Image 1 (tube, rainbow, N blue to C red):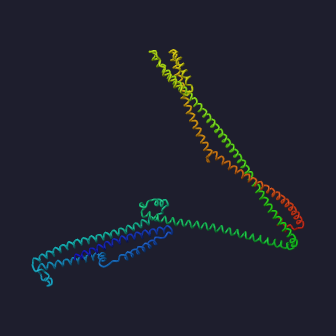
Image 2: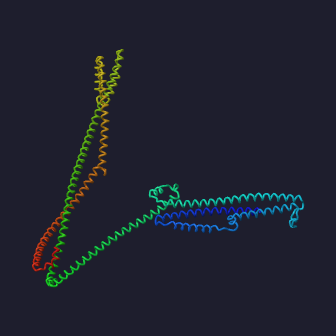
Image 3: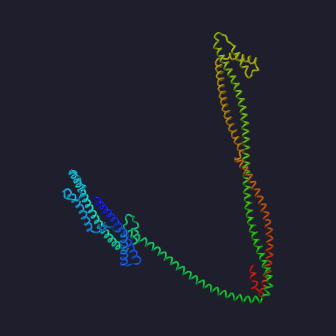
Length: 580
């Protein structure tokens, strides 16, 4: 029984949920139908001004179709639909369930009271009273549990019925809201809306637009496309009308011109017929003059061709002459450039020769100066040796003077010194130098002390002067060596510049060679152009002679024309003579 009650409750819940889902679906369908009908009504009112009766018929038809669709989607089945449809059926089902539970409780109480029952029931009872009481207690507990469950299920059924009633109320409210929304949309759409309001609605965001704004915007967009198509069609029709009018006018003009041309053609035909008759009459004369006219025409054509060739040759000669003058000017400029390069090259060569001569002169002077300085250095060294010998002698003399206290003067050292001096650079005089040294020493001894001191000071000053001159000469030698090194480096650079292919001198030489080659080419071209000019002059003389001949022929033709005029045949020969 409990299982049957739970299954019924689940069926009721499933039915309620199904009804809710399909109710929402039906509400959405109704809203869509209302919006579609309103849009259609607005479009109809805007475009064709339909009446309200057509709108009501259309809405009723759409509602009937939607309700039939809902009936097809959710058909009612069995007792669930009946129970949800009528409250009396629900009450009958509740009373039947209560009767079933009460019958079960009565059977249980009759067994416990010991009343007589069927033998099959008594056979299933336990033998002892204790077990029977326990079983009765268990049955009572189960009955109580089932009663509680039944009460809970009844409460749930009441909740489901309340929920169903609430859904019906919500559906009625939704239906009334839809009706109100439909009437509001109809009333709002009946009022005209300006383009500024449409632009304001279009500028709003999607979230800020309501249903009415969305409907208005959609209608406005559709109307815009329809207006654009209408304007395009009107514009196209206007263009076609103007094009048709223009073509009609052109057709009329062409017809008029055709008539005029037909009249002209007819007149020309008549004149041509008259001319043919006259030509038949004068055919013999035309046949005679035809050969002459052909000859004259051929001669005139040849004359024209010769004249065109003459003009072409004259133009070519003028072009060649201008080109020759331009080339001669370029040749003169190239010759001037070559002369300038030659003068610059000669100047560079002269400068190089001058630098070479200066270098060799400086080198010779440097070598002479070096030789002079070496000679001076040798003389200074000799003087320095002599001064050193004199200094040694003076020192020995002073030392001997210091030892004069015992009255003996040792002359061994001065003699050795004089021998050492005599064995120097002038070592060829041995005995006379020793004698001179001895005489000098004796004269030195005879001198007073003040004189000796003055002589020593003079010798010392002279030695210092010689030392200063030697240092100055050494500085001069170093400066000259540096100058010689710089001159050698500049000479090496000049040699490298002369030998280098990318040097200015080599580039000048190559440029001069190139200019010479260009000058030769230009001279050759000048010779060729002069020859062509002579040929063109000959042709010009020939053309002038031909032109003179043509002029004479023209005079003859004019004379023939005058003769033909006199004969009255001017119309037949006008065409060939007009070629002149």
